[in-house]
Image (cartoon, rainbow, N blue to C red):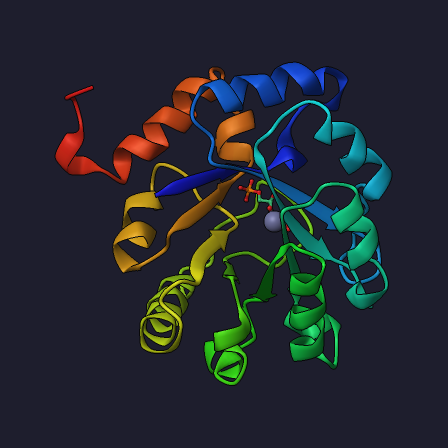
Amino acid sequence: MKIAPSLLSADFAKIADQIAMVEAAGADYLHLDVMDGRFVPNITWGPKIIGDLRKLTTLTFDTHLMIVEPERYVEDFRKAGCDIITFHLEATPHAQRLLTHIRSLGAKAGITICPQTPVSMLEDVIEDLDLLLIMSVNPGFGGQAYIPNSLKKVKEARALIDRYNPACELEIDGGIGRKNIAEVGAAGADVCVAGSAIFGASDPAAELRALKELCAPQTAGIR
Ligand code: DX5
Ligand code: ZN
């Protein structure tokens, strides 16, 4: 299981330390939530801030665009150093075109779906995806409660990926922590985003390691 700490819950007054800490603890990706106050009722950061963060780490930047008209901005985010660029299926009428565009910029291309969007909506683009992100909360904020129906969606997405595009990574985002990470891993998730679970913990590095451990029960206690 890969872990992608979400900077949404990090303390930006000491962001360099926060990034160094999760990197040293074994973070696989850094999850960057871009919000525009239109697609979601919250606002975060854009390419300038991400470009500045790029100087702090070589970790893969897993960028989750929660913005309308994502096609207008993907080039800027790629230039800022984003490695994976994921947009919402609900935010654009031309998802397949945008996937191709993101890949042509040299980034990995992902689609994410809100809790109300069925996994079957992705059937005809699954082969063009490098990453499929299942939202297990309504996007917009950290620290929300995990929506239990997400487990069914992870299983459906796993089946779709295994059938049509086994190289595609399956990621889940929202309300992931100690109580459910093993379950979503067993259901087929490859990458778990965790924001408040990690950065809200008294020892974020230990929490990250604990989450990884919970997904590898056969090795628990050996390291
Ligand atoms: C929510 C974001 C998430 C958020 C997750 O819209 O997409 O990445 O940071 O936060 P937690 O892990 O606290 O639910
Ligand atoms: Zn996210």
